Image 1 (cartoon, rainbow, N blue to C red):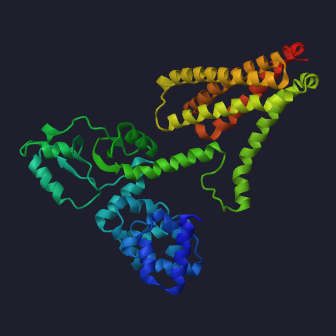
Image 2: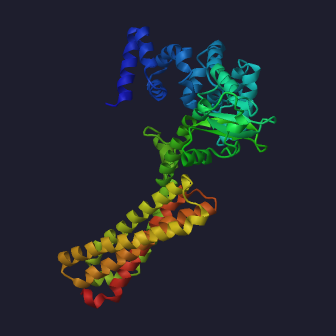
Length: 449
């Protein structure tokens, strides 16, 4: 039994006996995701009872933002507006914006009236950005100081800081609020008190535009190992900051999307998704795979005469095609990950292709040589081992080449590589594997009989 199931049973039991104190203790010691999963496993009466405790201000501030649209819809129909007034005040602006993204327009308007004017304006600015942009998840309460401030004054203001998230870096702006530089807290503390920030700062700060995608922000943070990164507009004015914890969820969601797409599954499908819905999500890709399988079968049919003369060839077909497919998926996975993390660019694409092709040749020689010995020992036909070895070398070479060229090509065409790459690579490895093996067998059939 998994942890979430155990927690659900504990919560249900406490609800039955009406132990409010123990129930609050369980909720306070549970993570937002655990609370969300518990909530989804309860019946309607249990949900309503639990919600009155769950939406305690201290608990809800770090849980409600992680709830699904369906759970939020249930909650918003059960409670008066006064309950949500406290939540609006408790949630940071960026978390509140994430919550608003999941609500209908009418519910957004009902909650907006509880925001003070400053928070309302910040919220409207965040909601104006595209959902996948950096601006949509930035924290607008960024701590920044003028470049003409002294170190002593900067430290004093830093101590008084109460709004926004934890400060990792001190951002310095000019008179026009443009980002002028950045100072590490260590450098600030070690500097002389009367030193001006402009003389201490790094004048070439790395920042990202608010219109940049969240994936690109994640790549920047990963590349430079930042704890936070400033967000600016087109005029380089400092708008906010994104911390590493803000971007973790984006990275996790992107990784899950890539995994689902490579398997031909929609990211919103779950274990208990209704059968009809699952069929609608999976069937199209299965039909595409069926079409490619028919194409591979057509290649085999070209050599029906060869197979009839040497029936044992049929035993080795899955091996040649399967090894090519596995090699192709290895290359494909590395290539798609490299593209997702920004490790592969157009200028170094040739180096990636060269490396993977060379790797494919080496793996082909290794696996083909072993299989040649196995085939000879198994069937006692020396030429059969040679044919299998050459076919495997050729197919793994194709797999390595296609595994890196296909995602790069799709990326150039602005098509998601994870969506179509798997089908294309599998088609190539199946067709080429069958063609190489059966074609060589047809040419050397007199040595196989």
